[in-house]
Image (cartoon, rainbow, N blue to C red; front, side):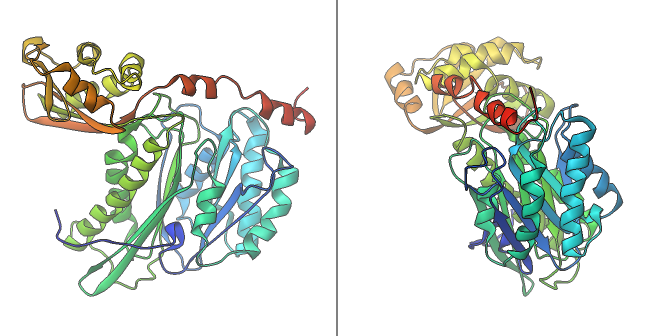
Length: 419
C-alpha cells in the first residue's frame, strides 16, 4: 500500500522516545515466586490515547475503571498485573483497581484518571493487595527507558514466552517509532479475547485520528484471531502517543495519517499472530481465507464458524485434511451459500470442488496438514467479498492444561480470601 520500509528495532513497548517502563515481583499468584507480575509504562510527556475493551458483558473491575477514565481524559501511564484478573470481585475489586491507579498516579504526579489499570489471571479471586500495594513505590523507582521486555514478561499468564515488537519508519524527514507488547494464549476469540496489548508511539497525532487508526487496526488484527472460541472479561488494547518525535501533527485523512495507520496495523498484526502461535498447547498455525462471498459479513460469519469449530480444529491436530468438517461449518454459519459452488483448498491444493471431493491425491493434502503452518481457502464463488482470520488446532494437551485452577484457589485460602 505504501512503499515505506519498516525497520525492526529493540525495546518493545519502551522503544518510542521518552517512554519509561519497569516491572517487579509481587508474588500475586504465589508469594514464594519471584517471577515478574506487575508492570508499569509511563510517559513524562502528555499523551493522546485510545483503548478498546472486551465485548463480554461481564467486565473486570480494571476494564470498567479504565474505560470510565479514558472517557474523561487521555491516559499517560498504565499499571498492569498478571496472576489475578480482578474480575467478578464486586465493590472490593473496584476499590482495588482504583487503589492501584491512585497510588501510581500520586508517585508519578498524575491525576488518577491518567493511569490505566489492567489485570489478567484467575477470575473470581480478590486481589492480594497486601502484596501489590507496597511494591508500587519500587515499581515507580525502577522506571527506565529500555526495560520494555520486563513489562512483556510481567503480564504473561499461560503464555510460554513474552511477546513484543517495535519498528521505526521515516516519513517526510521525520522518524516515527511504534512499539508494543501483548499477552494471550488461551480464551482467545475475536471481539478482543483474553488478551492485553499495550502500544506506544512517539508520533504526534490528534486524538480523533488516533482513535480511528486504533479501531481499524484492532478490527484487522486482534479481532481476527481465535484459539479456542472463548471471549474473556479483561481484554484490553491501550495505545498512547506522546509526540516526542516532534513531527507535524497528522491531519485526519492525510497521507501521513494513513501511513501511520498502516504501520500501527503492521505492529498489531505481528503481535496478534504471536498470540496464536503461542496458544495453549497448540501445534498448528492456520491462516483461513474466505473468498467469493456476497458480502463481507457473510465471509466473516463463515470464517468464524470454521475457526471456532472443535471438530475442524481437532482434525487439524490429527493432521487429517478433513474438508467435510470445514464445509459443514460453512453450511451452519448463517451466510448465503450454494453447496454446488463451494471450493476448498489446503494451501493451493484443491480438496473440495463444487461441493464435491476433488481429484487431488489425499497424500498431498495430508502432507500439507502435517506442516506447522498452512492455509485454508474457502471460495464460495458468489461474489467479491472476502475475510481472513488466524487460528490454531485444538489438542488433547489443551484439555488437560485447562482442567483445573485448583492451585490458585488453595493460595487464596492461605491468604484468607475464601473459606
